[in-house]
Amino acid sequence: MMPRVAKQPGLLSRFWQDRRGVSAVEFALLAPVLIILYFGAAEFCQAFMAQKRLGHATAQLADITSQDNAVTVNELSDTMAIAGLIMTPYPTAPLKMRVSSVTRNAEGVAKVDWSRPDGMTPLLRDAVVTIPAGVIENGESVILSEATYDYSSPLGYLVPEMVVFSRTFYLRPRLVNKITCSDCA
Image 1: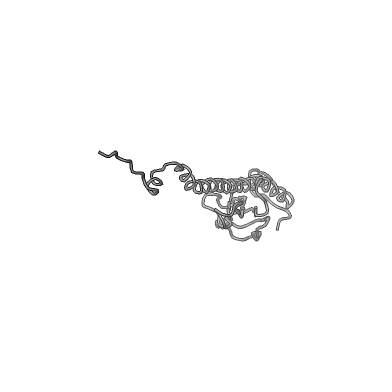
Image 2 (image 1 turned 135 degrees about the vertical axis):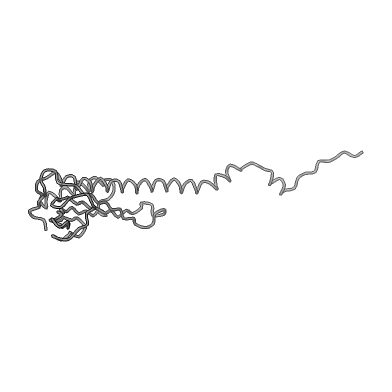
């Protein structure tokens, strides 16, 4: 009887059965996906925070303006500067704002009393504006605060195009029926 000699597996068979390096291959397959998810989440958070800050800036623009009896162009410029500070650490160059006083007349038509922009076109005096139902009644006034922000991704890979965020706030004057602006257009 001849002794049996164990048959040596072939090269392909040994390669197929070898489990060394499986973790490295799995990591190589998953790493790009995980990196994209990480940067995507970071980019989403940055855009979300810019949008939230725009909302706060717009609300503060209306809030500060609505707390006065009368305003001037310089006071409105200072208020807009404060709104710009709220956007920190985001750049303020893409921030465009406008604050206006709107009164609904006896016929129910809302018209602009005055408007002060920063980067936007001003609303013309007596221009008709659409105010949502229930905000003001006939004969009442409201401060209309509008802002837009052109958000550009710092990475540019995940969100290659600019996204425009916009917010609008309506606040009633607190101390008087209508806030006047002596030197507004």
